[in-house]
Length: 430
Length: 149
Image (tube, rainbow over all chains, first blue to last red; front, side, top):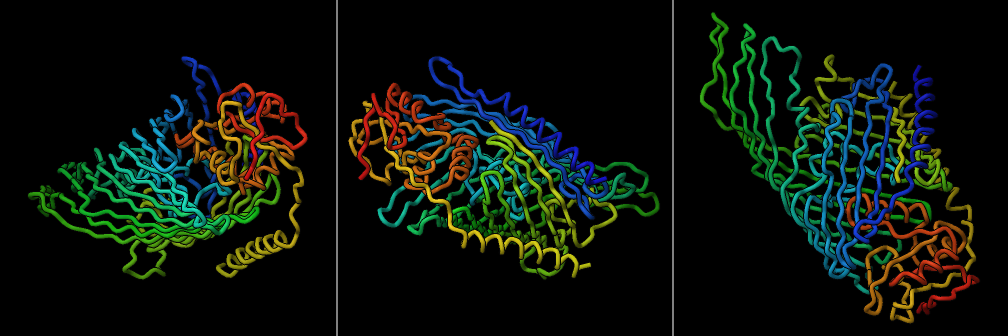
């Protein structure tokens, strides 16, 4: 069954993508005597898992094709120094995205010199090796980037900021070159992403008696920087990133009492500290490529919500006055990856991705880690179309409180400790 | 169950390691073509360093000798392969990925890419600030050839 589905998907999807890419190769037009470039991409994925539903899709059983995304951009040059453009992005990945189009980026960029450049608008956030390019599946060996660092469901948490960047590259004679980026602004909130989905999901549905939270908004400011050194060793790059956030989450708590009456009360969560520090390296040698990243995220939050009390005889519940509670989190995650391009049309690779949900507790618990050993093959069918086949051998699920691929709502019977996952993904761009 | 899984992973990794080892042993195909770096007559520079060529084609630098420059590439062929090997240090696939990463994040426009040396020469000849490369045997009428220091 699975083989048939994959076969149909592979042939049909690739042929459709080929036809579409051929039709969409015209990409320049003139507007007010300026050349405007139009580029776009689209991908379609199929996921099938041995156990555990993954990324909000019913991947166990016969699998799921509910992994589609696309983006279209237009850009032009205003003189020699100014570049302007915008991109729209949309996706439907299981219960995420839900075909709500978003402005992915819209920027005006002024390059004074190679060592000093200014960018304003909604800009992709530079964080580690691939944060700003994570949607561009066609430039990677992988169908899914290492999910410990680039989780598909939490894409919206770091993808962009509305504000400004200062960046540049300084050549340091024989010591290579150093590129820097500093940025700050408002974080666009992804109400269709995994963060909201994870919180809004009640532990069981329908709730006979329980306590759930529904978010109305979340967002705030973020600032950070990135420093990367292209070393004198040919092909070796090392770098470090930092991002800090100040987010406010608001919503409503609902308590369903024994008589199914709903008792609402305000809910708010404030970030007291949210810092992520990362280190990364990339090395290319001939057709080899090696990447590695490590990050640590430390968060402290203050949650304001009301505690409820119920009268046993009547089952009627009421909320007391709101009170504040503090929580702290320490996440560690990273990956190492290696790939090799065998021919112009074929490359393969493997990575090991590791996520620790609570660094202060036992890392060996399946509820405290997600270890993902992945092997991948990429076929470049032509310059604009690719097909990937990827196997993931996932150990752990990070626990019920971690929204990272595995959600309690999608796995109502509980989690298995291991998940074997097949991903087939095709994409085209122009 | 766990043993079976570990064996599968081990076998896959073995295959990858063998492939990696083979790739180191098997000599890479050498590209023997020479290239000339050419520019529009508006470019004031008469010579250029290999580092500057790399910076221009990786879109880090947009001027040479005070003149604004715009890189022009060929889509493939011996001159293209030689140019990438000698000056850019990336294969075509990696270079295309690099350009796309800039285009799809709003950082730059895609450089002009043409099908042949003749098209590159014609485009460079008529486009202010254009800088490109062609095979050493190609006619370069109407453009200036830059000396690479």
